[in-house]
Image (cartoon, rainbow, N blue to C red; front, top):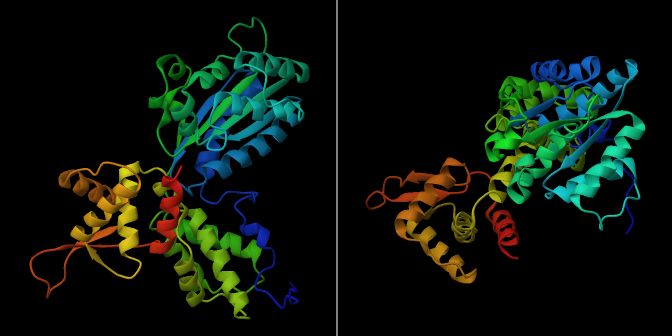
Length: 388
């Protein structure tokens, strides 16, 4: 396949819109950064262990702040003559204690074998690496709730008590736990005793003004001057403010820029933003779908299939669709009352929209629509999650 030469583009550096890009400063997260710095400075100044827990919805900056903090805190430690090393683990990808430890150990030894060692042995090997390097290790466990659901809190307990049997040695392991949920209540009592509830740092959803500043910052980094209209920035901020999701805002900005390039436009217009919204849906929607229990997924799948050709369906049609999906996936259909509860919960999550029928229809019928995600995309996403 031959690719045509790229013409002029609104983009200066698209990498600045990547989810992997780490800004030098995090707009509107100064308070959380200061709090985390205050909590962890004693690691360097007084040789103590410290732990913290970051909680907030998708797109509120938890992961980015932890990465930025680790990079800057390591530089600070080095300036004080201390060796601080960090490892960031995504617990959705590594949801067992051994998988998490393997990720940590490969930081010290890239060729460490991926099998053949118990967790106890891996912890002993980790201790030797830390002692050899005379380091303090900062472990960041992102999406900690997934690890706790899958494997319990044994590993967190072991890491939090890593130096308990050592006498006269400096502290060597600290942790940052990240989650959308309040995971401290998911730990057993011994593990919980090592965490101070005052060390919880909350990340609220971004307001429209916050998102406007964040998008404006990325526009300066990623686009040529004058290529993004101010009203386009405002529109993106207003759309994403429904969820307070900076990730979604940046995703919309990138897609709108790509659409402008496709049209050989000299600027990103509000129409490009509206078209981008039509082609994307929020990362928070993906997370909500992934966390649904099987029967809510079956209800939603029945709705999605019915709505590929319709703007609205009745609750009766939705219940018929639910019965069909239950039969298809070998699940026993729940009763009408429970089905109504599922609808209310899906509505509360914003995955469906329910409203009383408009004038001209007989009686008061509750109608269902899909407010954000295209029915076909939703159907594919749910089917892939329900099939083994």
